[in-house]
Each structure stands twice: as structure tokens, then as C-alpha cells.
Length: 193
Image (cartoon, rainbow, N blue to C red):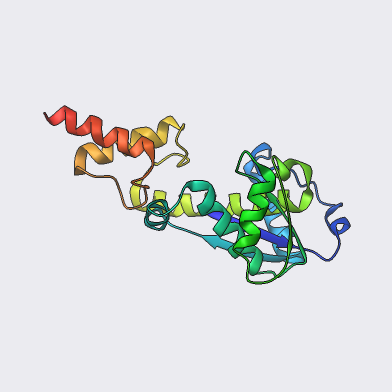
């Protein structure tokens, strides 16, 4: 998982860039924007691997984990204000949760779909998505085709199914706490019964 923060002095600094939620941009658009954003703005990137997510999930739910990661990325820039995409159904509660993990005062503005509403959040979304995509490409050099790594991706599910079938356990790059992995492990064990 990758979480990024982008810093600027004035929100207007981003107006000239065609930034949107990274999910609606084509890969080449994201790559070009990534280079522009990285060149012109302060960046903080926090990554957590599958084992780290599994460990965190043993102590907290996924929203709490993401809130900690958001806070860590924000602390890398130390802004007075930070805009985040709320992953909790209660955006105000999510803002309080993120703020509670900070080691300095910062006003957190959390909204649903903030990456589509605020260019600064869209910029962070682009940085995180490109960083994640590059990590997936590195994993493909090690494992072959693994798909996008998202739970609904048939190529990812097929990769996991084959890996678990052939080796009896999921690959190190897969979260064991992920429901898709648990289901595939269960089905694979049933196949051997």
C-alpha cells in the first residue's frame, strides 16, 4: 500500500496542471503528471508491504491503518492544513483520527472523494498510484503476471490461485489478512481433502 502527500504554499499553484483523481487518468497521463508534481512540489511517500499490513490488521481495522499512514505522510511535510480522502463513512471522525496521530498541530480536512474535489489530493493520488504501479511492475519481474493486485482483478485472483495451489501458501507479496487470499487458501485446502 502506498500513501502520498503533496505540499504547496498556495492551492493555486496546482491550477495549471490537469490533475484529477488518479483512477480516471490513463497510465501515461499519470506518469507525466508524476514527473511534473515531483519536480515542482514537496512530496512525502509512505509505503507498507503485505506483512506490515497484516501486522497492523492484527491490531486495528483497515481505516485506522490508513489513518496512521495518512498522518505519517502528512508529518513528512509538516503543513498547517492537510486535505485527505476520507476512507471512513464519517469524514469528520476520520479527520479527527488522522489528527490524533500527528505529533504537531495541523488542521485536517477530510472529505469523501477529495481526490476528485481538490487538486492537491488528486496530486497525492497520482504520486501514490504511480509509485504503486511501479512496485507492481517490480513484483511482476519476480513472479510473472500478477495483475493489478486489486481484489476484483481476475488476473490477480488467477495468479494467487495458481501460486497457492502450487506452493500451499500465498506469496509474500500478498496480504494474508485479505479476504480473497483467505478464501483461495480455504478452497485450495478443500481441493486436497
